[in-house]
Image (cartoon, rainbow, N blue to C red; front, side):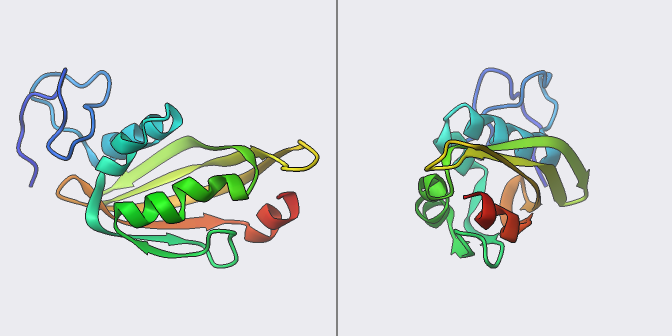
Amino acid sequence: MLKAEPLLGRDCHNGARAPKGLRTYEMATNKDIIENAYASFAAGDVPAALAVMAEGIQWAEADRFPLAGTYIGPQAVLEGVFMRLGEIGDDFAVVPEQFVAADDTVVALGIYRWKHKISGAPAVVKMAHVWTLKDGQAVAFQQHVDTLRVRELS
């Protein structure tokens, strides 16, 4: 169980920044935590994005995705996924459009966007990410994406 404590202007217990608009003594919800992780990643604050992950997070990229596999721990996610996104295409971006939360699960629905490495043509593919949280930290991540379309556009 998360302990209620002031969040504005300082880090949360897991190292992530308190979500914008959160009032003093209001606990961050699982949805807040994941929304903030995407915002941090988009802003280039990779350490803050990694901070929401538990030490033993099981991060599963879809089979046949260019980065397919299961990565254990934030360092493995950093090295095996985040640092390799450029292999898919230039200017790779994860753009969440909707978040759905229930209990310990948060689903992010959105798109991946990038430019083809040779032609520069824009590419967009829909994605769904399923997060499982425990005690305010992400313990599991599962990617869902049309891997054939990603390979066609890369």
